Amino acid sequence: MDNLPQILMYRDLSCVPGLYLPPNIALKHFSNGMEQCWNNIITASFQTPFDFDSFMRADKAFCDQRVLFLCISDIPIATASAWQVEHYDAGYVHMVGVLPDYKGRKLGRLITLAAMHRLRDEGFTQVVLQTDDFRLAAIKTYLNLDFKVDLSTHESIPSRWNAIMTELGG
Image (tube, rainbow, N blue to C red; front, top):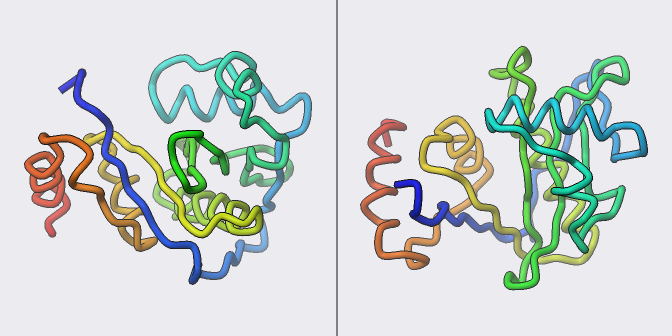
């Protein structure tokens, strides 16, 4: 499975749910000095080391306002990016992660929704994202946000998607 493509999901941005943050949560965009916070969140979420400067800042889509964080008392606990990828005629939700101590609180939904709002504000009408088969909690979040799977991107996707849906009980 390691060489198989990620699952591609898509959604229209014409009717995005409102973004309502709990009183103790603030939405912020990246500013210098937050690199290590991003590294910590994404490394913990993906269980592999990431470096902000080489992975995000080096990308030509990088813009401070596109890298979003949910914070408690100014401490970043979740991140997602509202990205642009040349080969998609859509905005791209990129690098969604939540610190392990904060999982199960719907923060992945909130930060994904914040990225969707940012993309819509930039003028995108569609959004895509890619995810791995084993990221079942993330897939469930994306389905709850009305993302659909593109079954045509690779011959393996329909059977893999059936297995994912069986795992999710749907």
